[in-house]
Length: 380
Length: 165
Image (cartoon, rainbow over all chains, first blue to last red; front, side, top):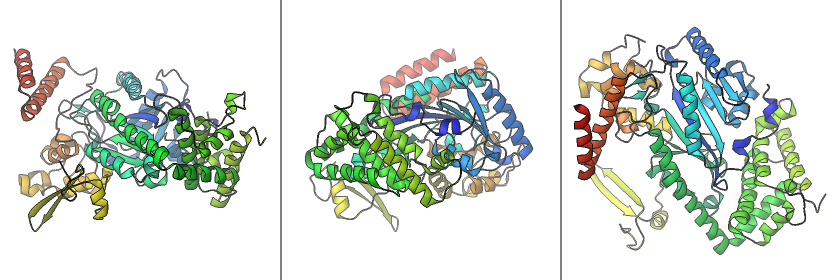
């Protein structure tokens, strides 16, 4: 199993399916664990790290996950592969560019990964499409039980699962959702979302982690407190309070755009279409924003029945109505695929070798042009 | 609460300013904040939070005398000075060795909570499990008393008594 086996397409967790997927792109739960009887990583020698790595890799590879798993030795991986794994949300930046023996076990369908020797000995994560946090929680708990049957984790009755950083102690759980909030951004109300998150003691990060909040209309929202509150309570708070509140903000902004600022909406969608269909050089950042506007247009039509001149044009581009073969219509899955496959490391891995930025921009523009124009039955 | 500037909209921004030890509070709406050019910083990344927590903590000498400050973990050789520098602990044992110092930090990072609530490893001995359940009940009882939910507090007290038998 090679990374190129997964790099030329997107997997289930990013295909635009799942509940509430017009706003909640994906759900993720991560658990931090450390082996009992070992020091935390900052105090381990490379020999000790290798011992932990071997032990945990064997356990991870032997789990019955209902899917094939493969292992990537992160410390030995080429830089491009490391960037790819980060873009793909399969490992963290810290894990990719950290020190010492470390690796990741990945289920082929990508719903599960286990980072070994990241900040803690083991960080397992479960990823699903749309808003499916309860399902993520059930699945990761089952996997955690399977692992616990084979190893002992550092645990204290008072502080729970012991982690290298006291900010993760207790349940060691990080619950997060990836949100698409283009209308809040377009109407200048994104601060509302940031403030709501702050009031609820949640962390907001951009698509690629801390400091990338301005890089796209995609945000990751996650809990900060992990002690004194159970896994079930955290998940339930996300599902019953936090997510509905954010969705309401975004939907109100979408309705406002439609009723009061339809020119702004149409301008953004039309410009995005024009550029994406015609540009010959396009940066990763520009592509993320423009694709985001197409995504908003399609979702506003599908979920709110919106019909403006630009949305009608977008639908024509989608081929809806004239195209008997629905599968070829421009779908949210196609937009998501373009989001992912035009990221720098994806482009280069699929191309087969490193490319300089200008060649990347050209290749990106070509992939997008061909996807959008190919799917327009009137143009083909 | 109404906005103190326009007296019309709901105040959603609450500012506390401390100048020369004088504390002033301001409650205003989003629109007035924009007009007054008051920037509202929205979120704190986790490592910034951690370093802030470490920075605002009183020195250990102030709190507990020089004891923990000079302590070295017998298991991993870790010291508090290293923790301040690296932001991560050396081994599970550090949670006991530096408990007093860590407790203040843990409390701030976890909304005032200091006791685990949630999953317990399957292999945990039965009496430890029972002990943890008692700790959780007492924590819930404290919270109920603070929020003046006396009905819940009474129920929790009964539960604790029953289990203590």
